[in-house]
Length: 81
Image 1 (spheres, rainbow, N blue to C red):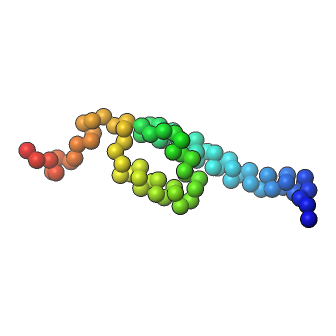
Image 2: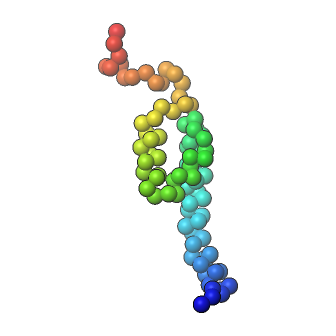
Image 3: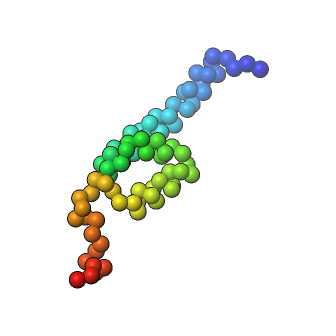
């Protein structure tokens, strides 16, 4: 059984909304990563379902290089005088 050209066209038309959504997510993710001080290439991990959950946790608790040093201080109630 061979795949005809019309079947390839139908497949591309069916997958085009998902491809477009993935490209938009990668573009938005790279902008967020760049603003946080990370490489925009990290955004490629957004389209991998098990890895994107881990990526969110890592970015949530890791220090962001783009933040100034004064923003890295702990809250006042945890500082020692």
